[in-house]
Length: 260
Image (tube, rainbow, N blue to C red; front, side, top):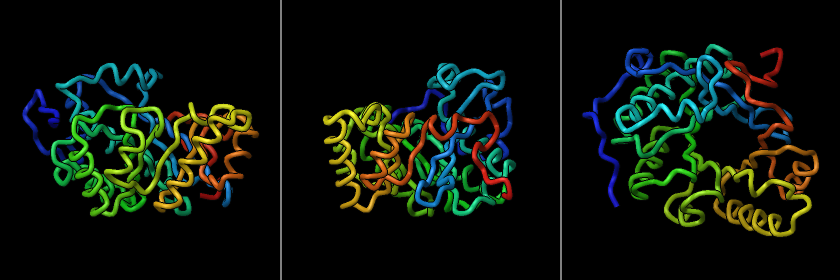
């Protein structure tokens, strides 16, 4: 398998370059959705979710991304998320992380492509060891070895790694064989009505056991009912995300403590 070749020449970008709106043919912003720590009853992290400046959905914004701007968009998303999170006071929340989705096929060389992220963390005074990078299992990665090298470099830089939408994508357990992230997020389709579905219960119980053996933290996504949440808590899943707790807040941090 091969790594994606960019349609435009690769040029390392810094924080200031990523904030230059002329670098992309469109503008965007972020909404933030909390991942709750139910044991401590506070946000464990906030996931930055791309949105259009006029309220366009993530799907609409992503439809504007192609091979000519994928790298610049990926870099700009990182900087935008850190800048907004810092402005909203996320760094002042106890041990709270900022979760950023990234496009592995847009990363040319991890040690170079992380440059703008580290510059933004320094400029906006955001602790880099509280930045979590999520790669969705729903995106087909052109090279497993390339993704592994990205995760290894992020770990070396002190960043947190996560696999998003686990159970809904291309690799499944094969991805865990190649590399083990700090965090694994179980896809919402495995969570839906889990309190009533013995098949989903068996599958999720197996994932939980694997993660416990590998010392991987688990986040359950798409929680919509108290019964779903309670069943997952009975399995020891303390980190949960979904509309039961809060919808994404447009340029805001839902459920952030008032005193922060």
